[in-house]
Length: 382
Image (cartoon, rainbow, N blue to C red; front, side):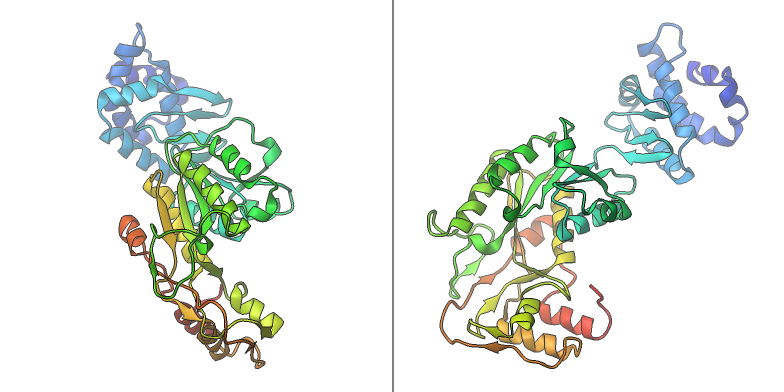
């Protein structure tokens, strides 16, 4: 046996369990033998012992994955990763490195490099966190809030809540800023503060708004289209200043069209007020919350830096047609909305094919009408 396995064999803790974990020991032996030569003079390789101890306590599925990762890693790289291993808690071991991607603490495994901080985990941020956890099993997702009002809800989703005042200097591989401008007196400063919580290894992104584009029905707006000139709208100025801070930090911007679910969005506002002082043929560009979340997750997973993306369905709908789709579901009562003017802006047409091609992403719902039809038939519940 190699010095690593000899060391393990002399350890009572491992003797009774060695037979049932033979594949794991072989993986360790083939990858970390150089650690005994490079790391110690007596061949006992304490860091390798700690790595093995951590692997023994993994869930079986995680153990198999970890062994596969160890086997596929170059031997020297595996050795260096194990040499960097360090005990971080009395009941856990963290092994870090290019291929040492598994961490254990109190029986919970965290995948190194997929950690995510959500600043402002409201409806959209919570959906991003949930989808991220589904795709990255074992990832640590933290939701940073101004108050504790939603902390229990976040825990129920598997998101670790914390107050902004508790953030300290911890940095994350991925950071998404979803907080609305209304929650801050100095929005740009909040974004700059969030960027400092990013370690620059993954992606830092900001969920912006398509409101930064001008409105002309004769222009097909894409990711790089011109934005509203500075000074024309205080709201847009605030958004563009926020975008500039994100891009300067190396982050990405996702300009989202109007967000909706069955019970949220422009249609719900119109149903509430009944009399709407806008023209019925004005265009709306929309995107379902779940699709917006999957788009944000795709941006984060891509590792992109310094880019502008767009989130929309590529199928603008007139306000009148949107409401007709709502009525057709037979789930919103019988009272109709009245659009009270034939003047004003006709809106804009947006197309995010560049974003789709770059991220290999497609929305679940191709249009508001498609969602409304699914909702009316019971195939969509959110």
